[in-house]
Length: 94
Image 1 (cartoon, rainbow, N blue to C red):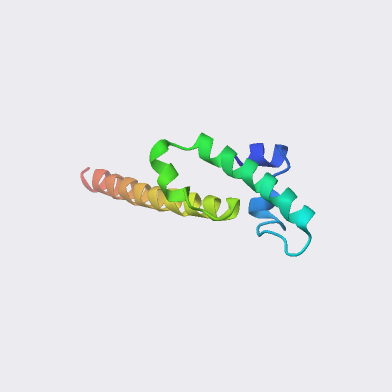
Image 2: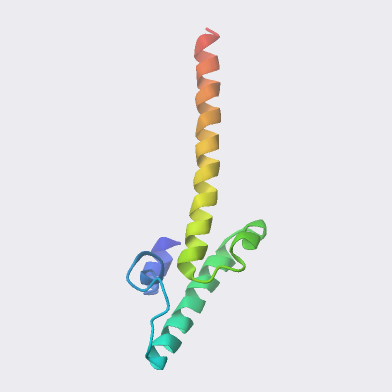
């Protein structure tokens, strides 16, 4: 997903200098909103339906990205702990 957003010139909305709507200039705001909409669309169409609930009301693409990143990192941490425990019990069972 990161590579896709980079290729579309949208990554700066998540990991760069454009994570928040610009102040002032109406043209800049309109352009940002269009690009943010494209980034949100890309994120939402590539995730599982049950994950949509977590990003449905995200205000910005960065907010959606951070929400998904925290959800997946927790699962990975839990899975790593379970695998570590399984490995320890296997080693101790020898």
